[in-house]
Length: 516
Image (cartoon, rainbow, N blue to C red; front, top):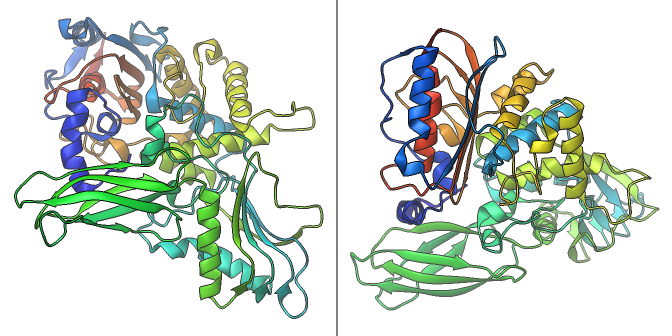
């Protein structure tokens, strides 16, 4: 989850006190571990230490589930309620990454067609519409590459020029109808849709479908602060109700965009002479944002677009007619890179786009009319798990990112998945996609200065009252271990967050000496 600099410093405390450990649970620094730093020599000592961690009185109102298995021998070293159905939060992404790599392969690339409603004539005129037929490519994200926003459109401008187009007489259409489903994931909450981690799912996306906002206090007390959209062409309308207050006061900003509306309300206070406040808001109908931006990019490159910029999405009719002419295509990075990014950074939209990619690959002549893309993806996940004997009956998902509070799984099923993927043809890509403790992704600030740093490779997960961590660790003895840890309904504190409690498990495993 991305968070602004000032916003994070103030909001982090609110998250912990309220217990809503969404971004904090996944990436927060855990502080010094509580478990002993001396090696755990024997299996009996390890089991006793693990049992002591999960059975503390402070967890009486919470639910733990733990499974630890040796990759080398296949034996179970420890388990605690391993078949208890738990909310996995972003541990759901492990299932999506495994499914996608298995179904499509790490070298798979998403190909986005660039079409004309008619052929380009000898004069370089397209006397019809130019259509970008979206296929869910999540890589049009200059923010990720720290590049200027308009560079997202460079590959399309190059393709249009290569096709010989000099003038477009019709409309420029961003067609997002390839994915047949609602803009939000199944069973997301209304609150989710106002934040970057709940951005709309669409077959055409841009900048992860959210825009950055910069707020600066005014020069006089009582005046509204200045609000700047850092990316253009969104179509959003700003209703700025912020107020500049006396110097030295607290900065408090809240951003609200009611789902389905284009107006963004800014509430709160900025102290005189204070620092800028960086935050964000989601952009509805991202296909329209994409069309607006591409039209501007083409015109900047000297290609006239005489019609409108239009975005369409399901269940609206596709803009691609039977006479459409191929003009080119835009090719994504390989799937292994896309999976690594959504795993490392726990990016929800990118996960659900890949999940949808697998779902649409299942659609055929026998698919029932009206079957949604996400339903096909959930079905494909169940079939994948069942085909490989991976405890499919213990995995109940509504969507892929884990933002749904209805997603349920067990640590036994998650550990089995990790064991299976360790021997899969895409094992290297799957393992490399996991965050590394103390090094990168959502684990970069966790378990630093311990035996787990640079050793634990695991997917984090955090929602309100949920902390999870599942992956791989090499014990002090050299034995390779798989672990899955989920903690639900625990109310953490400022000193002891739920994610910090979860981290104690792999810390113990990293110091395990391997003696019987």
